[in-house]
Amino acid sequence: MSIFGSIIGKIFGSSHAQAAPADTPATETPAAPAAASPAAAAVDIAKVLDDLNETNPETLDWRVSIVDLLKVLGLDSSLTARKQLAAELKFDGDTSDSAAMNIWLHKKVIELVAANGGKVPADLLKK
Image (tube, rainbow, N blue to C red; front, side, top):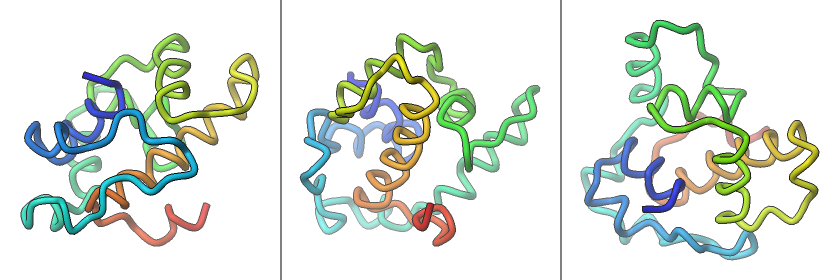
């Protein structure tokens, strides 16, 4: 499974992860929320991630950091994994500029989670 598919699977459950597009170009909209199951459409990602964060021994800020978001989900947050995620999501910047890549990845993942039926806090979509 793709890294983005793993993110979707951890947030929505494994059945939704299979429907999530792993190779969606950055300029295209992923699967419409209407394609998601009614249960998936009702998923409040802030609640899911905050609940996971409470059980994590580290102090993580998934709302601003792609590394922390991946850690909260129990996924590999290494530079190699983030570069792989950037390739999946069609990042066209310089992957050696990890700060710029990380900012782009966080924003893109949040946007795609919302596009796949997640209820995302408005302040995260404005960034």
